Image (tube, rainbow, N blue to C red):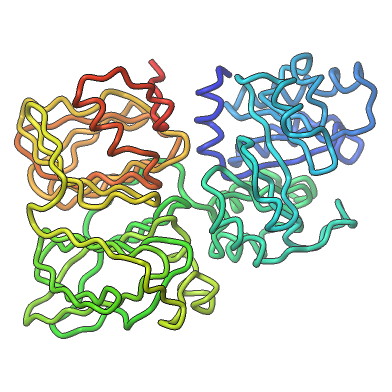
Length: 460
C-alpha cells in the first residue's frame, strides 16, 4: 500500500495476529484466511532464524492472504527483507535492529512497529507500539508481565496506534479494553482456537470501534482518542463531586438547561451554549442547580475514562481526589457566543477550547458553506454534534444526513467529508488537537498549508 493509505489502515487496526511460517507444521493459508475473515487487521510473520530465501518464500501466503482481505502484512525483525517479502512494514524489539535503522531500511512508505516492555520504553516515534508482555505467555517466557499498570501507562502516554500483547485471550480482552487498550496482538488465542474465525470475531468485537459512529440521544462512544458522552441531570442532581484527572482533559458543553461547575477555587454557572474545560490536575465537579433537567455533552480526551469507570477503582481510570489538584492548573470557560472568532464567507467558527488534548469549535454556517472535501486523519478523531439545522457527511463513501441532535464521531483512518444543507450550527471537536485551530486560521488567511503537519491528508 502507498504510505498514507497504509497508515490509514493501521489507524483502523485493532486486532493483530503474530504467526510463525508453518503454524502447527501446516501450510498457513487456511488459518490466515479464517482469521482475516474474522476481523484480523494486521498479520506479522515471526521467524527469526529462517535463511533469507526461505523467509521470502514463507512470506508468499501471508502477502497473498492479506491482499485478499485488505489487511496489513508485517515482517518481524528483518527490515532488510521487507522489500523482497513485499511486506507493508517491519516490527522490531528493544534488542533488535535500532528503530532509526529499521526506518532507514524500509523507507518512509512502509510502517515500523516497536516493542515496549516497560513504561520507560514508551517513547520514540514508530508508527505503532506493541506493549507487553501484559500477562505471562509461553511464547515469550523470558518477558516480565507488566500487567494492567503497563496498559494504563500506554493509555496515558501514547497518542499513536498501539497493541497490548502477551497472554491476551478471550477471557481477558474485555478487561484490557476497559483498561484503555487501543488494540491487542495475539498468537495462541487465534492460532490454537478450534474455530479461528469465530475466535478472531469475538476478540475484535470487544475492542473500540474503527468505523464512523452516527448516534442520536443519550450516547456513550468510547475511542482511544476521546470519550464522547451525552447525558442529562435532573433538577438539583449532582453529577460529580470535586475531583481531578492526572492525564486527560474533562470538557462540558451545555445543550439545554444549566449546570454549575467548580473549577479550582471558583464556581461558574453555565447556561445552554456554554463550554468549560478542566485540564489535568484542575479540581472540578458539577451539578444541576436549576429547576429543570439539564442536558450536556461530557468529553474526556484522551479516552479511557468511560471504559474503566464501571470496572476499576477510580485511580485506575485516571480519577483522583482534590489532594492531587494543582493551583497552577487553569480552566477554560466560554459562554454562549464567546470564543476566538474565525470568519470566512458563509462560516463563523468560535474557538471554545484550544488545548493539546482537544480543540472544540462552534460553527455557524449558511447553505452555501462548502464544508470539507474527502480527507483522512491518522492520529486524531474528528467529531461533530449538530446543534441546529443539518449537515451531510460522506463516511467511507456513504452519504449520511445528520439532523439536529446527531453526533458523528470519525475515528482516525476513516475517509470523510461534509457540507451544509442549509443554515446550521454545530460543534466540531478534534482530539487530540493536532493544531487544528492553527490549521483553520492559516487556511482562512489564504496561506499555503502542509496538511500533513496538522494530521490531515487528501487520499484522492
